[in-house]
Image (cartoon, rainbow over all chains, first blue to last red; front, side, top):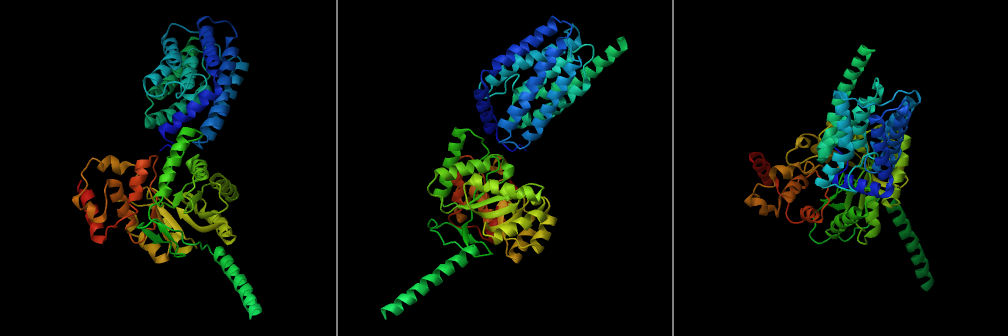
Length: 214
Length: 311
């Protein structure tokens, strides 16, 4: 049972989105940059990918969870801590050069790009079509749910192998967020557990194939 | 003679002042005018009377910083007090509810009958003190009427603090809570052995386990009973609201299902107060309606249960 109502949940987003505007534009610009890097890869693009994702996760942990969500949900302190942890892990993966991305025309590339497109384009449109369009809805790059789906998509197109430990927090959130979405009736967030569970299966498969080919 | 009268008067004044101070220390407060006809019950520890319908705040008042939602809750509170409400129950577990209650209390004029009830909810005793201080701040109060250990979490440690606060006049009554019918065995042991004034647990027309032991024990031990989840978080309405009200609802002056559910609860002799929660002014009106008119007697209570079970 969630300790807040649907009404209070969207009110938090309305305040949050209004307060951080126009950060959403920067988030979309940086998300677009990551997609471009995946489509036109260069050596070392992983550092840019890691930096952008790390900033997003650190921002969500500190600003969204701890400053805006915590007043209505004490659990947000715990979530925020995990999001900060994920941000630091992403930064470390970037420093070690483990997040190079390269979109390939295969199942992993297709699903990865599908998750990315969903998180950036379809997700907000579904919110708009239901009852929580701007500024009441979670937005890509600054809110957990669409950003988690995007991150799973990026990990699917990481080459040669995706660091599996970077999936732990996204998968956990996909289950927590998915359960909350079910209770709150947020249609677009039902994609979260789908992305989390299928993403982890596909990453394991992809990594096995990469090891086999290596 | 005049001098003697002056001496007597000064002695009488000083004596009266002393009586007032002594009364304040044991938690007496002057009876305030309750609306005519409102049903009240006595708190066994002191005989202080309170209306049988209070207000809970789990989820309903957790609206964060949204001014529009906060102002809407102010209207719910206004209706609550206008209809003679007194007990408001909250907890640090309820997110921003205490902050929103404080926001409302600061904006209303008719809050003189407030009976403030909150909880301490932390595994650490030292942190409980900080939490209770913070609650006073959020509510905008100097003292609480009732402090409770929420869901029995570290009740041994927190009862120690609550007894100390009571001795120093920072709270008038202390108690413990559970909900959802859980930990009744442990609650029973606390009720038998600890010097508390209130207990809070779940009891409603479908969840009647408390009738077997907790309610009789509370009566036996002279404990006031607050009932939470009177509507099973709205589930009773989901199940019964579209069913016709029984024709005998009028025998206990019930005009809607909320009043039947609430009057069933508060008509139990051991229950002091039920604390339904709502976000809506019209629902608050309905809830407070249960504090007026006749309460069902034993036979009608049985009829209510049989009718509900037949649906």
